[in-house]
Length: 218
Image 1 (cartoon, helix red, strand yellow):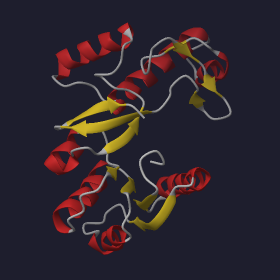
Image 2 (cartoon, helix red, strand yellow):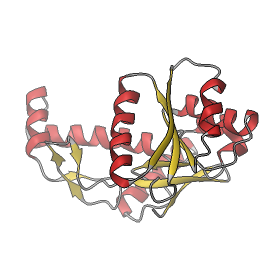
Image 3 (cartoon, one colour):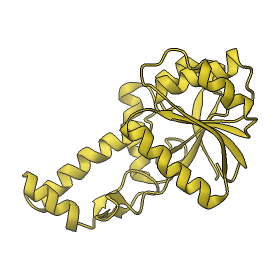
């Protein structure tokens, strides 16, 4: 966002994940000089977010950021576009059929972060996964599908490296450095025990173009 805007309005889910995610977003925004002109949380079961989105728009932001999920992201985006006439950039939502179906043309140019792009991957292993998935389910896999597949493969690999037990898998997650990578550019990875992340998996940007999420350059 700091590469695309100087001032943003941010709304986020009022739950443990939403509050923590916003806290980290705010810290990074301050570090990068990104001004948060307006912020508000909202309840997960909200059906009308107009009261918090009016001041979000009135703050005249360069972009509106939603830290939430697909359904609430769709509600926010549709309210901004259809009720409030906001035409600026929107960062939020999810790479799901539901989000795209609920928002329709309103989702055009929406940006989210991800770790996998079915159309952008160059790795042979990942391409084979995409082809197999599309053949069986008649749609390309997104981040949720590939990370679920990745997780199952990680557990199987960990069990083979040590033993198929809780203790064995936990030990392998700490020590193995050759987990097969289906995201990004392929290869192998190890888990960073400090961050509990795979250092080799870097975030990417996905943008909606005519009803599909496509990878774009930062």
